[in-house]
Each structure stands twice: as structure tokens, then as C-alpha cells.
Length: 398
Image 1 (cartoon, rainbow, N blue to C red):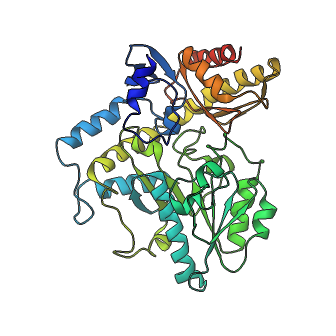
Image 2: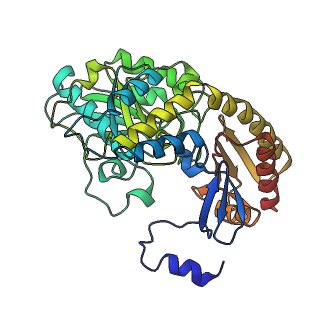
């Protein structure tokens, strides 16, 4: 592909991304094909939005069927896919109420609003004084509220002034989290595993401690499972790795099956009832097409097949990457949970360059935080393709 072709792509587009120089034209399963007909193994899966691979037949069938009937009504009216989707997702999460939205950031904002309103109306926090505890290196979205409590300068700089009401503590430090709680604290908002930070896994037992602390202090636990949930870590939700049940699940990305933006929060009615008609909404949230896709995603997860694939192939990926760490001094660490890995390179070795070399070798991956290569292949990947991925990674390092 010529440089002029790539320049043409950005002639009328804002430069808010720095994509790798590839233009995808077709995709199927774990593979994509560019405009020149070259195939690539997708080792990113749209940051876990494509857990079920590109164009999964069951999801495409659900889309086609719904397109023939109705796509949008807005929540001003009922439609026949809404109640079944809410019931399906409630069953999957073990909660009894669901509030659908569109993007992950919208779902996080919805959870923040729920926590604050619960704090005022149920816990009795004085008006406009509610605080929420978050972790450093978090990534919960791109709205001005959310980037206001980000510790990433690229996401935060020059977008202020920011909304108050958030306290940041070190990720993985349960004692610091407990020390930050006071009578104004209404919630802890946390990723069970930090994806954008480089697949950062907290110390064993951390999530369980956070759950105990939040219960002891009458504080809600909001689990952002937008990247970690829906099969990615070998369980339906990453919280299950420590037998933790949060007060609110925040879901997105893979909930849309790689077809359409779908997000939601799930909680029990006792919490969700703080929302009243007109207090929160979205024109496209819970639309018929989104609900049809979301129900099809739940059906795929309820078989357990994708969670099992993530566990089994993730174990193989870990063995291969651990071996690479042991043999290659340029790789400092490999953090692996299910089919999700952060490959930490030594300081001074830019992950962007490694990802560009991987592209030349027919593998799509993405760098994060300068020296981490993030791997999140679709859960439909095969064992041979996992081997191909690691082999190409080792070759790219050379």
C-alpha cells in the first residue's frame, strides 16, 4: 500500500488515532484481509469487542433477521426485543435488572449516576458531596467526567476543568483503598484487570478484599468488565476468578458481538430503582437491533464454549510466552489471564516498532504505554494460530 493511499484516508479525518498502516476490507473469524488482499491474524479483536471473532454466523444471522423487522423505536415505545434481552443479560449476570446503553463510556457514566443517586437517596450522603474511589492507571472511557479521574496525561491533558468527587488510590493496594473511604464515599469503581494499562493483574486476593471492604463500609462495588468480561479471562466475568459478585456489572464491547455498539449495567432492582422515568436515558440505548445482537451474545456465552476456549488456549499462550520470557532478555514479563496478555518489553524497546514489525509478518497487535504489546485475540482462535502468534512475536523482536 502506498503512502499516498494512507494519506488519502486521513485527508478529511481528525487525527485522534495513530493506527498501524493497514486498511482492512474483509474479515472472518480470527483473520482479516486488507485492500491489497493480504491476510492478517487479528491478535487484538478490537480491544475485546470481537471476542467471538469477525462475523460470527449466529450473530450475523441475528442481525439479518432483525433488519427485516425493525431497527429503532427509541425508548418512547416498547419493542418486542427489549424485555427478552434484559431477561437474558440479567440471567447471565445473576442480577435482576438491566439498563442498556450504547458505548462502554456511557455504561460507566450510568454506573456513576446510579452510585451517586443511591448515595443521596439511600445512604444519606449530603447533597453534591458524594465521592467515588478509583484506581490509578485506570481506563473507563473518554468522556470529560471519566478522563478527569484518569492518571494518563494523554487522555487527560487540556480537557479540564473536570468534575470533582473522585479519589485515586494505587491499583492493587486494598489498604490504601480502605483508608480513602469516609462518610461521603458511595462507590469503588474498578477494573478487575486493567486492560488499557497493559493487562495489569492485581495481587491474588485483592478483589476479595475490595469486596469485603466495600461491604463493611456500606459502599457499592462497580466492576468495569467492559474489556475483561464476557469470556475474555476464561470465565464469564473476571470477578469470578476470585468468587466476587459486585453490586454493579458494567458491560460493553463484546456485548455487541463486533456488530453494533451495545453496553449495559446490571444490578439488583433495589439499586436500579433509584432511576426514575426521565432521570436517565439514551435514544439508541436498548434499541431492537442492539437487543437482538445482545441476546445472541448471551446465548453463545451460556454454552460455556468460549469461556472454556479462553481457559485452555490461554493456558497454552501462557506457556509459550513464559518460555519466551525465559529465553529472550528483551521481554521482561508476560502477564496472561485467559486469552489476554500484556507482553512487557525492556525499557527502551518501543512496543510500537514491534507491532509494526508484526504487521509486516501478518499479525495485528497494538502497543500500549510505550513498552507493552497487548494481545487479545478472538476466542475462536485455534491452538495452531496461538503458536503462529507467538512465533511471529519472537520473530518481530529480532
